[in-house]
Image 1 (cartoon, helix red, strand yellow):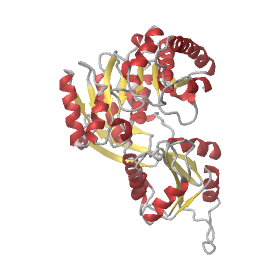
Image 2: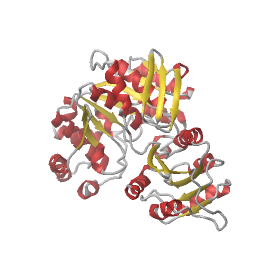
Image 3: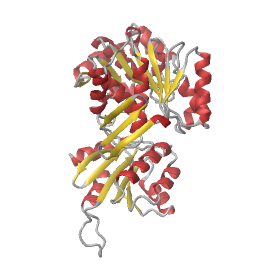
Image 4: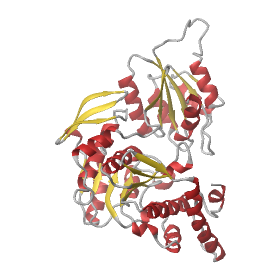
Length: 430
């Protein structure tokens, strides 16, 4: 990993496909041996991909999965699933595959060619691994954007999936919703079916135009067809169109829409990857996706969620308010400085009794002091901490005021913001 992070000569993020195509060409184009379900969007990519992958795996297919970013360890980015089995790439396999990529990068360097970024090199490693595993299909998430994302070199796409598009990564993708939607729509391929879940009209119009240009059609999630029968912090039971009583274990009101988007995708796969109703139900019920409104402790209640931008924060707060009406809510929050943290602070107003802030472990991390100041400006009691350990310590010890007495048993703790802050929380609580 030290090597893969230090080989690139250019920027850590450099949008464009030429370098990735050249790298893969020198590696024998392993991606051409594979079939892909390609997913782009601002929020919900991971959850939607999880539903699709698990349903296919329970149907007996060997499913490759490329995840970005990693939350707990680098190996989780490259994995395969079949039945109930989930296998991360082993350290040995990663080393073996990367040695091939490393040799090609060295040749490119000697020839004076533009060198791949870290993400481009990892994408090449993933394609080599998936080809070596003889995956039946790969569920592939874009890293950022779509049109110029490294993953968009793939050609054998069986379905393009666009999750909800919102304002994010404006520095790279554009400063309006329409500009960002154009980038996401860039994964749409000639005559390849598209499924999408969008609420913004400008995004819908952009996707429809892209579909016309590519001679294909788009199937949208019909939100009015969703009927939630039950929902709580353990998951949801819902109906959608002709599907009745689909149960999912992923908590969060927003997960029902992600599941419906996955249903639409699976509907487009009929005849190519067939999944029985029983296999689909079992796959959805057993879908897990760590760090997405996940209860990681019962006593006290602790919930972790990667609400890393305003749109995700809105959905997160909606679920907090819905599921934990009677609880006193304490937050631990850390975000990146290139996110709209002022809007995120505004959304926290009136929900949390107190929020402890931390600085995410990244150069992009917003300082805990600045975030606490933004929250305080909006009437949210906030206190900066030096680390997740300190924040959790204060929360779990009760952080009693002099006159507060014993810790209230109805308190619930929410750790949210950048996915990068969750790893230490899991380590400390487990």
